[in-house]
Picture 1 (cartoon, rainbow, N blue to C red):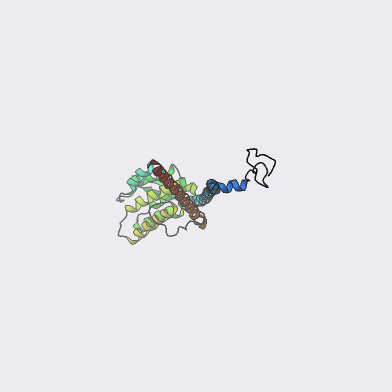
Picture 2: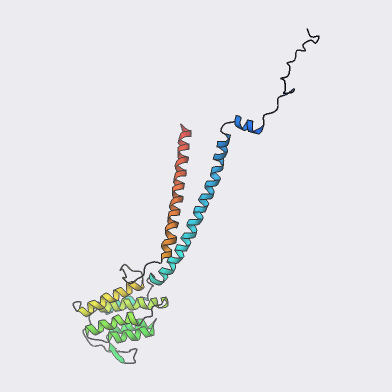
Length: 259
């Protein structure tokens, strides 16, 4: 028998000391299931936000490139119809009337020749003098022609050959077209030369400005518009899809919380 009396305190486990060692971090992490998954879920929004920001930057950059390329193309081939002086509209009404008498109003042509025009024709030339002296002289020469075929040909030349193609002369080009087309309506419509001149005039006008009529000689937009515009549009569609998916998920959580 041992001479030592039991002290009433539990004996420590052999090899462990008076107290158990605190569990290390790995044991505590393992004892808490789901902690790693929650940390991964917390990290996902940051990654998703970076992807969305990159997609948005790509869409904006490519869209800007495509927009600049298209603006340059439109400035050269799809120019808007400019405003013309008010007198042009009044001149159109006068020029639509068929010429039945010889003119008495003297005007000088581009070649220096003096011609005599009717009151309506003289009104049109006076209107053109307000914004383009050279155009007015060519118009006087065209309106001085009496034969329908020659008159139609000269009116077409007025718009096609005597107005420069650069944008600075767009106002004169629009006014010349309006007056020439009105004068062509006063000629016999059954004359082949008149119909051909009218069609050529309409086509020339459609190729200079953005009108409803299709221009067969207008070049297509540059390839850069499609190469940059299509990916930009697809990127925006992707962002839209992400936004719709996020909204749907938020709505499902809201409805589940309300049950």
